[in-house]
Length: 178
Image (cartoon, rainbow, N blue to C red; front, side, top):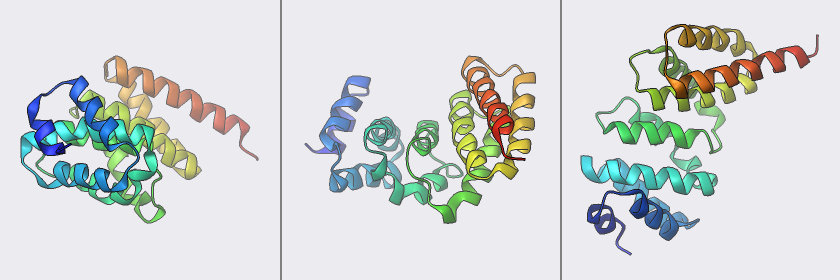
């Protein structure tokens, strides 16, 4: 399958699933998909984003070498779908320790930004919670961000994730050794 040609053929969930199935756990095919996402035109990047996220849900190890690139998309002039699916992917893959600071800063900023797209904020909550679980000193700050997000009438996805994250933070704090 020519992945680029397939991306341009049709913009649908069915096509994204077919591309994800074709890529499977194959690192070489995933590299082609990532190249299209990161270096091709706006339309190809947009369409590649969903397939990339689907692959990474099933094979999260494939995304780890690309975490730095995914972080760069968050500040780049790319389609919103690329940013959304980059954050979505960060929920599943291993996050390299040298990038934890950048990941935390970026995710906390997304959670705090009421103008950020709701799906990005929702996915960012999950990634931010991963960082706060790894670094308990971040938990009070995340708790404040989540409470603030809930006060600003976020929308169902953000509300649901923020509520669950706060419950998990309370549970973690209650079980922490003193």
